[in-house]
Length: 206
Length: 102
Image 1 (cartoon, each protein chain N blue to C red):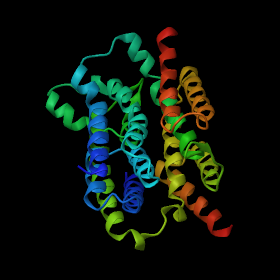
Image 2 (spheres, rainbow over the protein chains, first blue to last red; image 1 turned 90 degrees about the horizontal axis):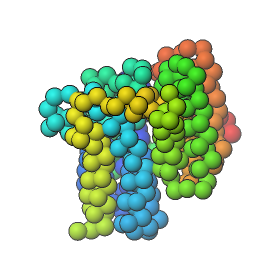
Image 3 (cartoon, rainbow over the protein chains, first blue to last red; image 1 turned 60 degrees about the vertical axis):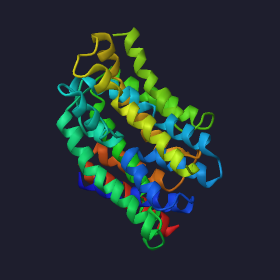
Image 4 (tube, chains in turn purple, blue; image 1 turned 90 degrees about the vertical axis):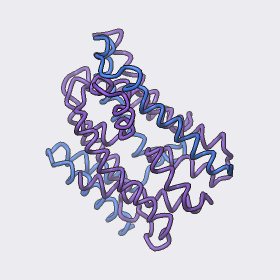
């Protein structure tokens, strides 16, 4: 979890710097990190605002990016037994990283791992954002440290653990190809959502 | 309300609803077997798409830059069964090195 936490803190700081530059002020970026808690969508919203894109464009970009969480949330629902209120609170700790590390095979997740990972990531993400907003000029560009390569590397390592049979390998290849082809022709967010639709193939073929 | 706070409010509301959808609507109920079988493919397809978009996508375009070196190093590290932390650190360090040299 340590590299995940460091990466989350650094990218939280990067978000804080960008949000501040986009004129979002001090409190709004921090509140956004604590409520939305989904990195890529926050970057998207801040950069649209920065380019003067307006409220509708900023919200649309972020919502498209986060629509995959609806599918992930339904997929993990069987693990959320018991109190719905507790489920509502704990489900907010679903992020790509916590969901990915909690996989235990056959599409199932370990709820305690997901919640634990989310609880580690959350303070680093929000704290990083606060640092970025307040001390952005001093921190420098996280890309200088290659941190932008750490995330695809993380997802790659987690993907490798998922490739357990021919079906999952095919799903990975199809998902990757669909995403790649759609990058230049659709708004950000759509490639990953379209890739998640690849799993619907599993409905028609067992 | 300023535009900024409106964006924070709307994006937050949508995202919280997305994340809560499963536990609130379904609770701990088991998914129908066909749906569960389909969702087994969700992790590999979404993770592969995240690798591809994180490696290549920049503002809706395919961009090839130094981080591909890091991703390549990560592929080798994963094949050699390096632990997760090592894969991430190697990818970041190799990318930073290439940026520093070039």
